[in-house]
Length: 107
View (cartoon, rainbow, N blue to C red):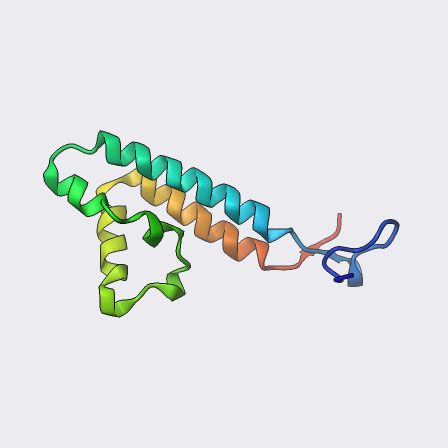
């Protein structure tokens, strides 16, 4: 069994615990998708709707995987600039992804 998921009665290796990342990232991605849909429905004007259209996968992608040939980084930046709640949720998701990759001391 992986040292990240110790068996019953075993302590995590070297007194550290690691968060199980998949459920946390999935939760953030699901909530971010729901928020983006809501923002898309409430967007006023054709420009706002055009900027938000097609941003779902940009919001869910890891920033290192954004394709410069498709101008994805700039499109994401424009969508985040357009809506503050969407930007806040996106940055929370990215922060959670960084935090979950770190070892945490056991309590």
